[in-house]
Image: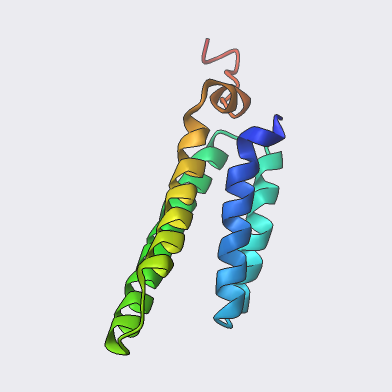
Length: 118
């Protein structure tokens, strides 16, 4: 497996793990930290599951951005830098999800056809 192709997914899950850990959500944090281990399985459901979770992660980043931006605006504090950073992290998670559509990763996780399916 080419590590550079899956590194964005690994980093995205670890960023989410840190985010959840900081919020005190230990179980989601542990799950996000361990999810990259699924990349070792060569099953056809692995990329779809990880893509779905990365999209949910991007939505979590956008939800966090919305909440923190509202709070900062309420206190008349600047929020543009916060928006850029969290928006970039959300886009990075989406980018990691799209990478599972590359030919190399599709080939790695393609379901092997049994003799009955041929």
